[in-house]
Length: 380
Image: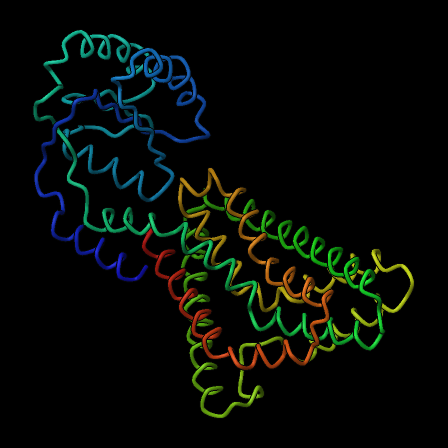
């Protein structure tokens, strides 16, 4: 993935747009507005979308000027077309433009029909096009890798040593309780399902809050850079943990783990709720409380990932899908461990496996976090 990323960046640098002309076989219409603008919605529903549906040769592109990328492109368009006065709503044709809802409502339909009636005015010929800043081109390339980074983050978060430590204690506790295989399965499935629902609910809450705060530029910028700084800081700590653990082999040298007080609290929650007879209810309560407590550690990956989702128009539209898929990947290792426990997996074997793979796990965690930081900054 890293090789492809550098190849793409190199390609962008070599083929950066330096002229102000382009050609197309379709009628390009660029509309700039905001998703919450009533006049924008009216123009799209009454003029642009109907014309696009009726005439497939129209290439309609909608740009949100509330985003850095959309606003940056608008500035470039205004420079290319020599727009004398900016407006909150603008519509660009191959060689002219309309600004403001009043002019667009009055003249857009007539201009579109004029272009459609004479394709020679826009087919197989050069027309005005903005000079896209190199930063925007690079950001666009980084967006293509965001989906991969989000999915990778979900997997890495699931094998986070913080989460694995809880799995080890849970299995060891069930072993001391001498639970039957059927009881272990009931506890495991109930616990895993509750972790999934709780973690997803936390993600949805954070996603909605961060999306709402996007309208406040200074807050949005502060969140963006704070999330990037958090990701870099935790990533560097993870690399440090990998180095020290490989050198000494001592778990006590690992700094990026659940605080001792939180570990003890988790152990108390598990012991207190899984000792009685109501196994399913106990597992649900345990899963809920443990997820909240673990968030101190697992949130170090989760939060930057959600910030990345909210920074991009495309990911905001499909953010719910990504959140669900992320959480499926997050609980997948837990589900596997629970199934293996059903078939007799011992806690000491899981602990030894974790210790044996601690260095690559820490390196992978650090790499994902640093990549998230880069993407958060790059997509603006």
